[in-house]
Image (cartoon, rainbow, N blue to C red; front, side, top):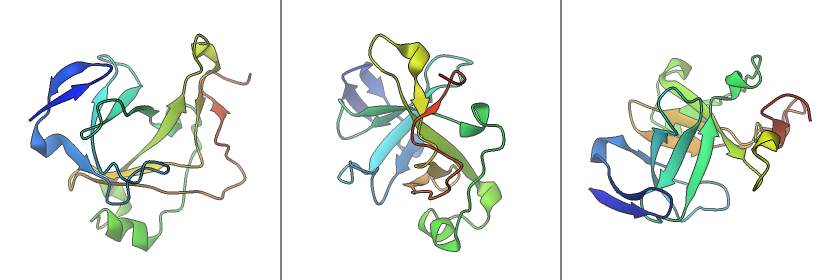
Length: 143
């Protein structure tokens, strides 16, 4: 299928690469289908682009690249919602915020991880209440 995006122009997306978010992303619950692709080859950053709204895309990355001891409790209900049998079926990504003109001050939201079952192409954003984490954790070290 072809999609038209604001940032990347027209893109060809294979249907089997589409991630389904049954509940959407927090604040964007009406958007249920996204595609995940790397920013550039070898980059730790990825784009999570909406299939249905070409203007909606998030920058995401593996939170353990920023905080090596990052871990969250994933409840059985989360596994069920993404059709996963075990935690090893999952990948975790977190949304990055990059201030305009200040990329060195980018932050990662460790309180709202996105849980992805890569095999089933299902995903869910959850909310953590762990006080070790922040929704504005510096990506490039302490600021």
